[in-house]
Length: 472
Image 1 (tube, helix red, strand yellow):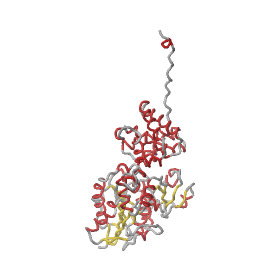
Image 2 (cartoon, rainbow, N blue to C red; image 1 turned 135 degrees about the vertical axis):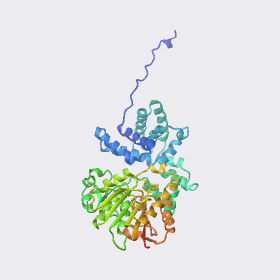
Image 3 (cartoon, rainbow, N blue to C red; image 1 turned 30 degrees about the vertical axis):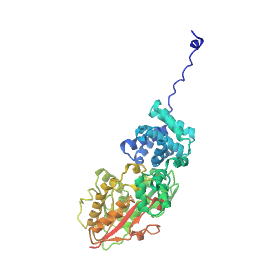
């Protein structure tokens, strides 16, 4: 027997259980819900955070970090996919989605936050051990160590094609938008490189929380008394909360006297309400009322004039949300579950009509960053007939002398001017109203008569509005 065979064997390292990090586990769970169930982060994340607080796992800083990890990863998904693809030895489609979610979370910590490199890698590997197992954690570790070899600017130089070779593909990778979305936004915005870059950058910024003081029920002065509250930019009913402001902690919001509503949506309702009429002003219709934000503001403004608001929503569960938003309205209102293209009301029975039509949502990518990865160009084929049908029904619903507002949270030309032009070509007795004059103080509204708002110009969602008057 040799001397070597008689030496005692070294004991192996004892197995160490992975350390569970509640913040990163919650962020991973939110991303899985977005991937597996086509859920929206703004609907999934709040209940997860609330449950974590109730269990005592989270404080305010933990909630802020979890929120940043989820939204930051979703906003930068396209850029991070390009980086990760350069660090793996297989096509990304062959990487299991849960593994890719862990890699994306880790990449965001490395390239999009101030978390130290060693902490970002080790925390991601521990997360992988908990949710994926030790075997795949080694793969995560190897990939993230490659990612950590450069910063975001360095990676972009490596994975994005030069702007001069392919402008749209370059912007797509740099600003993390699908190429077709870059093209569509650029067509609508017009202009050169500077404008589209500012717009894409604005889509990747965390939006402010904006409140609306519903007239007759709450005042902006009441909301401005809250900590870190400042006046809105354009709407007389708007109040903005500084980063970290919690709307649910405000009494007026809990009571339904105020609500969370982007200032662009407030401006759409204001323009419709302020449009000049010929004749009485007694009956208003919100023809696509769910989930109820615009209906609540319209209802409050209608109440100040003694007018009735009818809020119509096709989906019964969304009609329930509208009823909840309108509960306590100081004036008369009615909520009905009805298809706006097959109306339950007599033609010519309303003085003011709003249709904020279903759309691709490309104007709200700040709030729903995952929508940019779900939408496809072919989705426009499905929305187009519905949008035209709703506008035709709205024009039928308004009396002669009354006003219709066509609105959409998308700047895509196929969902905005193309819809209005197509419908008005097919019918006479309708004239466009210059909506710009109904939004005093709001700059850069375009050539008119319609209005397009922009995140990088107005700080709002990219809402579109065309106002029409029925004259015959």
